Length: 157
Image (cartoon, rainbow, N blue to C red):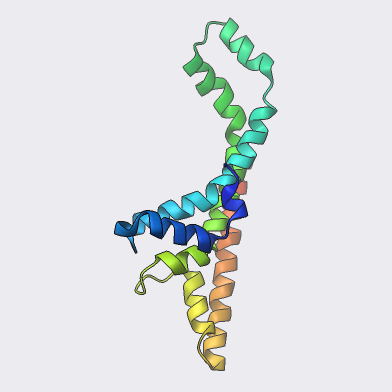
């Protein structure tokens, strides 16, 4: 179930969400929740892999030194999982920045994301519209690169 959004098309997920929550149609919370649903497998994949690789000795040592479960989680487990969480969030952010299918299903016409604006320009004839779409595509690529570099730089510090 954790990886189900990997296996199902974002358009199908958006259609299913519209069927489940028709009263929320074209609402920003529904769009954000859909982005989270589509992106969480990236976080879960990295965090679960790091969780499996956690050394049991560290948790046992913390418990043996008198730390309760909350303290062990806060001061031992969480710092060990932080790099994996950051990697997963980087991929999740990239997924959300470039999401098109679910956005097309769930957004209002007056809401414009980069991907829907690119789609709009490419749907119109003319070299000027094509050039605008290419400029926006470059902006989208640079924005994605900035997210990667920002999150990668934070991991090194």
